[in-house]
Image (tube, rainbow, N blue to C red; front, side, top):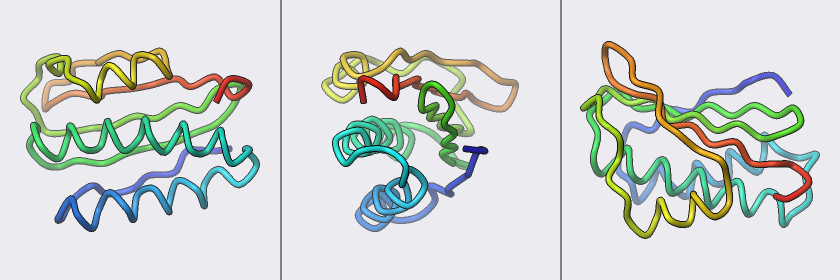
Length: 115
């Protein structure tokens, strides 16, 4: 699946449920359980960006042998502080942070056969 992008701007009460629905539309070839795992990881990453980072914020998803989620934000360019949400992300995916001049990208690889 080629990558698709979703804007994370707006009220989190609206953005996060809409994001989950959008992810389900993007991942129609996966099982319901796999989509649930991807949606949980995506929601946690998006929630962190909405709560702790500056705009612009967006999420990209692509699928090959893994599902790759990438959340871009406008900064600050530092690694997110671990909390309960990132503990969940850590249990369900292999994730990390890529620093950029204008912010960061938090990414997560979710194995399709384990999702």
